Image (tube, helix red, strand yellow):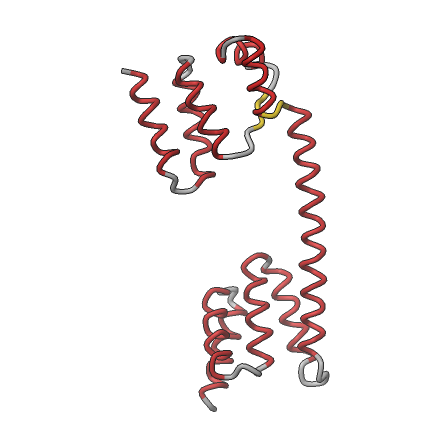
Length: 190
């Protein structure tokens, strides 16, 4: 068995175990040395797909294995199927995001509208107390979140600010400015 065959077999084994990261690395190594190797090219695409959807990737892999020896254009067929799957996902995601945004706005108000309410009422505290129990504020960006937390602290809602930080700070990943808000809340308690 040649080195190419050993690596291909190892990549396929990793793929079948759903270890897509390692499968992707091995397939990529194969493509470096054998850029025309159809199995490696398909393996890269399917491993990448597997990172998002195990079921779809495994099904296409099985289908490719079944037809690759009998169909010269098996790689093109798999490529077309993958493009169709990705296109369908994009359409579904766009529709779902639009629907989720509509639902969120039906249940709350945009942060920009809340800021207008603050101006109208003359203070954050008064505007917030008016909507606190009946409406939720839809925060759509990191900047809005930071501003909201700062305003909560300034208005004396430190415990509530801490609750929001604890529940949502992970959404922003390792962000020093978000973590700095904890210090702001702590300072306000002293």
